[in-house]
Amino acid sequence: MSEGKKMTSSRRHHLKSVMLQIAANWIEQEKKDIAAAKETYMQENCPAPDMNGDQAALMEICKKLHTAIDKIDDVRYDVESKVQKADKEIEELKLKVIELAGVKKPALKKVRMSADAMLQALLGGKHKVTMDLRANLKQVKKEVKEESTEAVGDWRKNIEDKADRKKMFETS
Image (tube, rainbow, N blue to C red; front, side):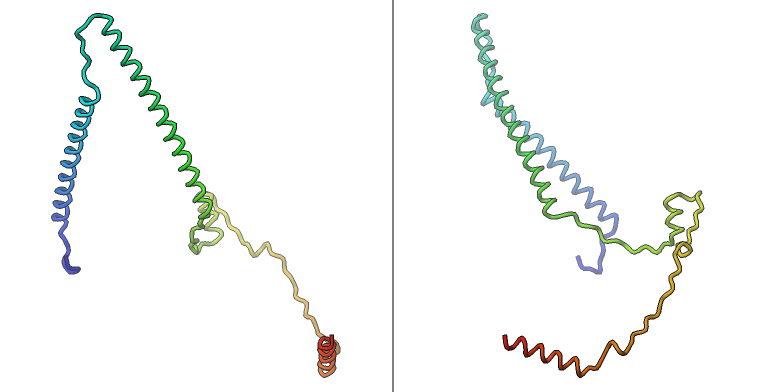
């Protein structure tokens, strides 16, 4: 679509509902496929036991089923422990990534609010607090320092002293 033409809201809603219907159909088909795959797997790997026999044959079938269940439980336990170990490693790695990245401080926004307004916002509207921050400050009088011109001295003498120092460093 070009930038000038916009889709109407009714058209947009219609397209959205059509997409949702298609997605719902896909989900239903997926559920049917999973159920069919499960059924075929169970028929291949778990045939129905033959119940035609005496009590000893049935007891033997029960023992075989019991040992198979024990093996499956052992495998399930091993898989669960592996998954828990992997989850712990993932959490540790996430923490390391956070430590390496550091905590980013959010950019602070400049707020134009007086101290009275801040206190009123913190304490609630019923507390009326006035705060004059300048009233608590001490008054300091500045002393004017007079620099004597005698301390500066003759500038030519300073230059001669520096020249002597330069010669002293060059000779050594």
